[in-house]
Length: 340
Image (spheres, rainbow, N blue to C red):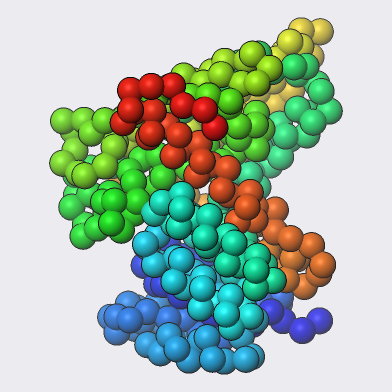
């Protein structure tokens, strides 16, 4: 089988789990070249991973032998890079979030769709075995109808994290804890419980951090079937705790977190799934986690490129979590309940 020829765009903090995944899947994917505008980053990446590097971005888009690009750059660069990749007919695996605003995110997705290229988004929590198991149980009706669904992200980031240029700003990142950290848990949450019908939210910047955007958000939600729930997200919770999703159904209750899954059903049945690697980057080191779920994202993307299907998390699927986050922030800013 011909290998998918990939170019990496962006060699910052996010690249390591992708590079490890590419090494693991070397029989399916060939890294043609990796781009950074910074010589120091190119040299460090080449030494660490052994992949070819370049400072010529134009050459990536003009190279007809490159099938796909992995875009790992800051959010405010995504739309322009997707335009160029789509225009060149290259499939795209894009780091979250889609972009810095819902309008740009929608344009980005439409651009890829109009060009007929496949767009996968790196929201790896859906690929965790415990997440897959809970999704199956819900689809089978094992928990009955959902009456309550809640999600929480309790990360810790020291001030030094936000002292990095552009970190936590509207211009570069598009937002704070919701769009940068909690988006992973919220995407998984939506895939399990669906989008709420309405949300009421408070979001703020706590005294713990000096930053432009929110480091603390709390929301109440209501679903179309009458179910209610809560969402909480912060980077103020020292030293960092497992993200968690709680779902109460008419037939039982499920708790999913970085440690695994526990399900208790009314008939006395207990089900569980223990995480192989519980590290999730919740503490001061945001990259302190295994790359195995990134590898699953990449394998799924390669399946789509090699076949007739689409990635599990397409751009249009990823828009759902952006709409939830946008509604939460709109509620906080307006002081009113918002519909989705």
